[in-house]
Length: 448
Image (cartoon, rainbow, N blue to C red; front, top):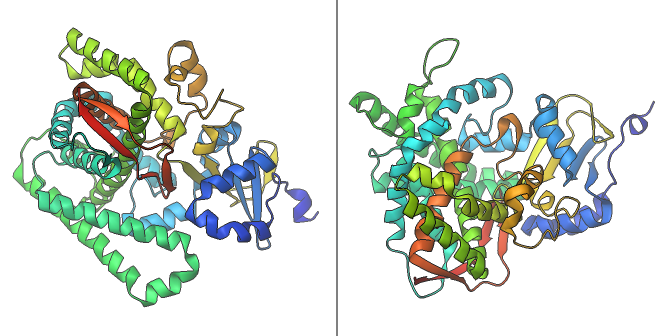
């Protein structure tokens, strides 16, 4: 039996068309993906060489199957495990299998709701001090401001007292440099020889090493100081493996902290930028958020209680992340042959699920391009949640989801109380890198 008869794949995009579109796809894949889905259906495939297959999907059944139902047979792609780990080391984001499970079980308790509740006061203070210099009465490019805010919230939640601004800025600089280079490596694979020859790879590996030593220094200072500080670093230092009763090694801790920095700041900055833009375009929705926040604050001073009551604000955030999911795509490779949504696929097929497209798939969403927070309220919420992946799904769902939602709700609450938001940007431009990055979103804050 020939391989072709043994396996069957979704409608195929011709390799020729793919190459003709390649330059555009490199700049921004999303419009091309949309065109292909409209033409081929909710999943399409691409064959590269003799035996390599790629599937791209916006089908909920595919997402559910690879992330939850049969997740054991679907590992992160080489792209995530090889490229990212070169600079990020072996943290939750980049590892797989037994080692991943062991790390996840170890770290999970530090992100338990009770623990997150202890970080809230500190988080709210950091947000307040980040917002006190907000430029008023003239349009500003919002993303850099939100990026700085989110970065500092992660940093201060991780290391409450033990980090100087100088070290902080250095970590931020290195993370951005390395990430930009990583994108280049991924998008321009044919230039790999040049990146290596011209010393760029070496330079960025050295930066990554410098980042490691800054973080390591902070950890070692904390270990010797014996101070009791209520931050994430403390929670991570207290964790113990079930089998040995020992804590993480310092180098493992460094890798996990890098992942928290990287996964935790840009995605949140993206979501906040898109959300504030949408509020600035929809004054009536903005007003409802203001009303909710003021009502809640008149009922209780307890921050955690306030957060639990922010039903409408949460719905706004969810609807914003539906339209613009910060982690807009994920990929997996199957370890063994499998049957996926009726297709019999060969092992090591690369499967991409575009959450951006799934979140706008008319099969699951009415008027998918419309901003409508009602989708995440009352009876509609249960329906919507089935097709909603802002933090992924299954056992590898984002460990920091609760942290991120707290941070975003507190930020929005502080802003809308003080300012009226107007967005001067009509259509949102974005750059789909590893995350969906907003470009040139301008917002004006005027005193309420």
